[in-house]
Length: 469
Image (cartoon, rainbow, N blue to C red; front, side):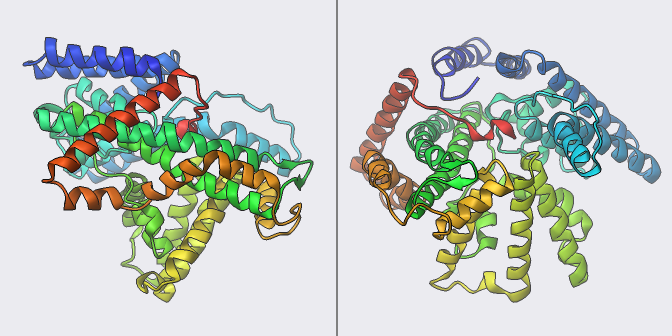
């Protein structure tokens, strides 16, 4: 079930809100049980079989949390428990997400004929697996009390706002909120507004950018790019906007929905496209994933408080895992290692601390090229596309289709640029007590909601990038 769908907007969400606030208003335990049941139903709507995998993950990690809490102080037992914890969680993730790719590569490089398993990918498995591991690790670190009730662990892992595409909510962030959150009208209204903004980002901007990007990336036919250099750049820029507004829009909707139910998730994006270095970009992009790898991989390896060669090694491990986490394709690995090289260079040269006029330009060029690799179906196609961007192998510099796509989508490009900079927060801060501005903002939200719903009702193009992760 997708947030930008009629069944979610007009059936699932209204029913959940009515039951939660009207029928279970004063019973926290029943509210939690109901939210867990609703979340499992939400997941089962699209994954009727893999909901059992979700339940299994909940029970396993709940049990591991209890065992590690009881074994605290017994080092060898805790080490054994951690090996089991990581082995089972990563093993399950690896089987569903990487088994087919791994066997294909073994057959390719070793010239074997091992049968290739065809394993459908459970939606959101990377997100709920990382959250499940976060629960046990945070319990061991005493950054949240152990939950003796498996239903509370289930609610943390399966809570529907952030279940299938994040943000990755660490246990320490909401450990206390599971049983002691406070719902109020102020949070509910702010959450509803945030949801409307996220819905508009996804439906009105990301989906229309996807039309341009899909056309441009589809021009690679029979090993050649059948378009101009300008079309290659237009498609790359469109995808740069698409992935940002798709994912940040979903994160906005998730954060808003959580706030409507009294949960406060951390921000996942802070206008990454205004960054003046690649290091800054990654402090602003997909923050929940970056902090997860930082706290559970980079810091345990020694972080930056070790020798220079070890720091480089630690960065290599983190960015290799980041690439692998995104999917089973060499393009994701290459994308992750590309950032390892860039970030290591910035760290060694101190370039990330020198905010100069050209910093934003070079950052965005590298980010756009990175997204081309990320979007491509294979490394061969990625190289073809990047070469076409610089005129190598392209069918000329400019063609009529570029003007046609700009003419059809110029308004979406304008809103994409506006939405990529912190203009609205700046206006909101400057005019927060201005009643005219408050009225204009409220009317704008209603218009965005109505137009978004009309696009959804008309079955407009509605791809979802992060279903694969």
